[in-house]
Length: 613
Image (cartoon, rainbow, N blue to C red; front, side, top):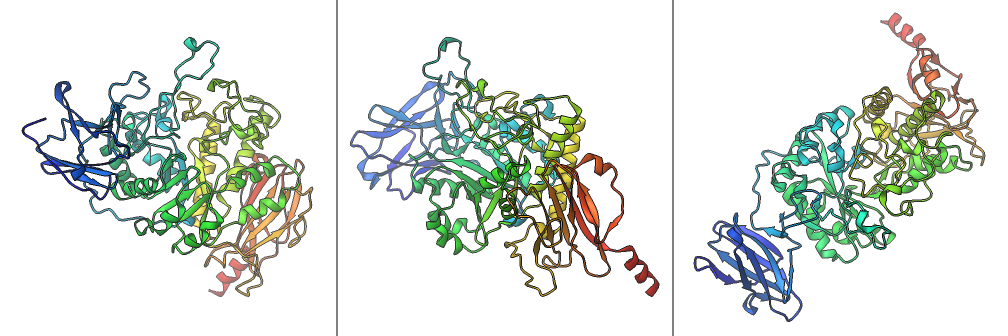
């Protein structure tokens, strides 16, 4: 025992390690009757063992205060009998600084906190209806050499890409697990030649971890706490919110989950969390006043929890909307019986919680691969292609994998634009996964959790197709953000609640006001009336996912207004686009294409107004 330390017992109220000027407080939980305590590791390999005493016991919680210790030179673990383990409440973990090092030295918790000057930061509190989400993996986002950043695969590398995110129009990023975890995976049991099996790395991080500590290998300055805070601050200064993804297996206590989320919200100023796991404590989260403005995004919200969610005030809970992907992919590839579900999914927008819409995510095919592959190609994962979803609701446009045939390339490009149109012009909150805006491929792998290589990383393409897709994605995001009618706070009612002769949303077919809802229908026109979003123009979204050309009727507008074609996804018709006005004529749609019209004052009306002046 060090003679220059003053060690006293205290009865703690909460678990964790808390430094203060001149010392540090320890509080840990032990339930067995074996001796338990602290193992301290100091300079030159010194080890000091300090047992907990019943004098510092409150229930199963034990506390010790050490004064006079230089917290910057010591680290710690706990012991219980012969078992030694790292504190699950550690705010920084030593020993995992180098990514992919299977020969780890000792893993231990740090004793120091990381003070930080947030300056005059204000909470964004951007409502879900105004959010444009962009999901990414911190390492995979910038690790490829084509990323062009100096600090590849790190928080600092992500900061270098902030101008890119702003150019695209993103206002909220969602980061896959970036808390501390062991990425070196165990060898697959039963391998035919285990000695030849390559080391695999968990790129995604969906496993148990040290939930209070940022991932050390994601820090380019060997200070993950500071790196994380610098990144959050930089994002906020550029008007971008940040949501962190956490995975909690069944073994994790619900109160522990609540403590983790509270800590990250308060310590790192994040704006919300995305939560995966079977036992997420929704009721606890909804009733915690500290989280009253935080975005809480869950895989599923149960009916039994809806009462607390509805009483939580402003809409700050959200739910994954996997049905959106399935329905929109099936409608896109021309499946029968999808028109009704498609129109319903396009409009869904519950009053008490948000729906996160996506057509591609980290799981499953990338957006580009969804028009290039029908079968998964996961052989590289080392599991005999048995992992990953078997059913993906995708169509390869006639060729499995890459193709240089011009007709195939153009069709795939059109299908990608169709999906981007579906995504950003639907109600709910759109989610785009990194790289999908430029046609990133995972080469048909729909479960690349262990692909810490070109398969799992974003390839920063600069070819013509990538540039065209990026430009179209940016246009769709800009259009959505510019007009409130595409991102309303509440669900559109299909009713004329304003008494203006038009409902907020209406559906049309070859005849106006008469959509074809039959089993074999593949097309529909959707009119969104701008009066329900203030003084905005109206829009007509024309979708034809049939393999033949069709004409949809354009509903008649009030006197003095006409329809004008704003954009369409078919390249041939796009090249012929003019400023021609449409009145009662139809919208001619090429096979598998979409078109966007907006209402404008007719030229005749403009001329009359000029004469009156």
